[in-house]
Length: 201
Image (cartoon, rainbow, N blue to C red; front, side, top):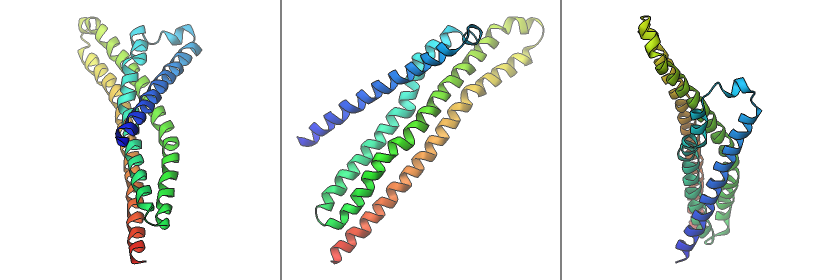
């Protein structure tokens, strides 16, 4: 019963945090738009901006917030387990302390980087999609003047502009996850060693 209550409270604060972060990202996008002059603002069509406020937010949530909170949930369960084990012997509190420190620092380390990368990815992909749209709209003219190869190259360039930021985001996220997993592994090994030493005492 207690575990269900804890899970319910955890989910409430997770979804509340996601709501707040999504709103914060939209405010940042709006502030960025407000700082642009007329010409710069209209380099992208309104559909691209609408995409930033809707589709891109969903992308940020799926690529950044959800994996992040899944990791936080996993770490919190490890911490609770370690605390339970620590009640067996005081020395295991050291492992719990290290886990707690990691739990406090991890969001600050990962959150800013992931948010920045995901936001940059969304903006660059919107620009890439706008470029593809421009090339598509110019197909008739290019075809009329026998520039179909230029049309293909334009689509290729726009497509890479869409995929390159996603590749960069996914690759860096993977590196952060690997580093995160390595830290958890080291902490687990440390806990196991200390637990074995405790049993010999």
